[in-house]
Image 1: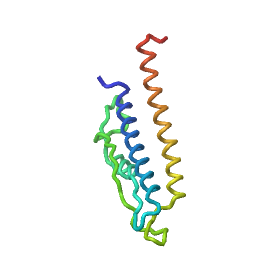
Image 2: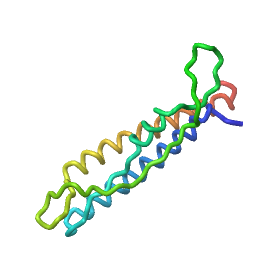
Image 3: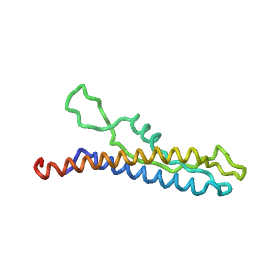
Image 4: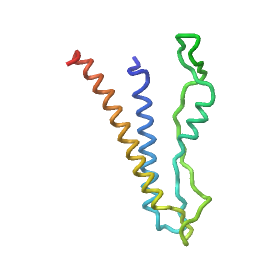
Length: 131
């Protein structure tokens, strides 16, 4: 039985992405003074856009609904930033950029947590019979 039409799985994958992104940002910040360290990024949106641009599969209940051909895949990859150098020692970690990305990722993560809590609260209400 698939509860919430796969919403929980999508939220879980998004939380995994956010967790990996947080670890990557933390690694970049901790290596801000390491000579020749190259900052890393987690790419997700580019992969998602390329997947969404291809056709997707979905159940159509009306001929006017959009046709989908493939299942959505949520994947991400770790890439190294090689095209910039900010420090005299060959390091390219921009601490201000990393801190801004960390704050943005924390907001994203918290919104996912709020959404998944809402889903579980709805399920709990249904199980209790609306009480």
